[in-house]
Image (tube, rainbow over all chains, first blue to last red; front, side, top):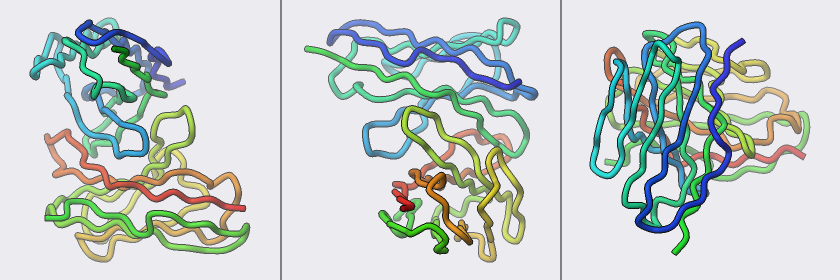
Length: 110
Length: 113
């Protein structure tokens, strides 16, 4: 079957580093995206990896290993505003259809 | 620019009633998507459209219909609402092709009693 697995919750203190892992098993694979969603809000795009390796965008980085069907999102220098849910999503075809994981709730404490 | 808007923001229906959710975008994007999000779960794709006049089924299409008569609008219909359709519905758009970012609307919170 098709599935994406990510931890349900991670708690960390301000200034710390958090890594959210995502393993996937899907019938098609074009790339792995990450989205952030604050409570009651809309998901917003963070990153996309189509090739193996690390992509860095400010305090956030995303990594992909296609051979391991594995990726992660790295949040550095955590801030209180980073408290949110983070979703990995596989793009499975040329139409851009996304299959989402269940999400990881990140709780940042003072 | 408004980006992606959704109407209504909230709605309560009784079982068996029908309704239409409207998604409008001023981004001139080709691709549009309807998702539902249930508590503790990720988003699941209901239907999508890759251009005006085209629609296709997603992961969970049963009980829903869609239409894309104009490029800027994507309508999601529930013909006979059921309690299992209680959810938050998100519309999203994308440029399509090699562009990967999807832009989401604010969502519609639907309760079916």
